[in-house]
Image 1: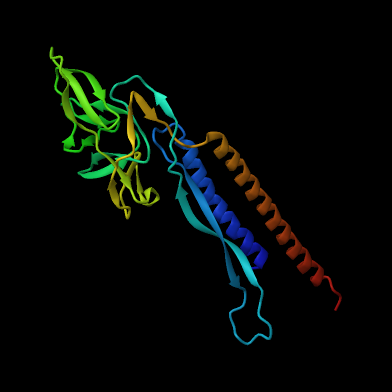
Image 2: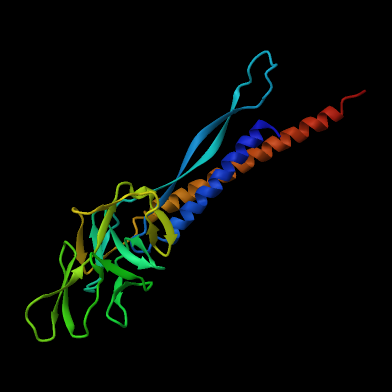
Length: 253
């Protein structure tokens, strides 16, 4: 196969994977706490010839290589919900939740109460405090969450705040190493967990996705145009090759 066709095919393959990443970002533009992914590319040089008996060295062919993706961990916009159980983190921390018998992490602060009074996520995972799950009593009212995560309530007719726990917030040495599990959850992976002392909570708010919908749609159009342009170029190369073979066949004996 000609080098031009190989180079074009390598670019089309990376564009296809880039489109998958963009499509996933667009699909999660309204997912609370979602962090956008972006593609990384690099040049891959390889010689067309592999023997060592050539007089001159072949010029190396430049392919496009899909190196991987990186995660944008930037803060998403805050949206007021006026729900006292909703919380948004201002900073780099993550909520710790109990899911499938293990501790995982999320930025989605859309919380509710279970039938037993435990604070949980919209998917039913228990929200962890520094001393275990946060549990409310049936007579609790006027729930208040301090910026440091301390949860207090008024119990029954009492006029003195009662502490129900403190929301566990954790940070990581490198948040980009967190592994996505789906359902807006992350696993620590190879990232090292650290205690958080800078992030704060905003009660009655949720953090929205940090996906720039206009930018992602523009990028999607750009990828589609690039894919089409390369397809046309490959077709022209194929037609040129076909035309050359036909003309060679017409040479008189």
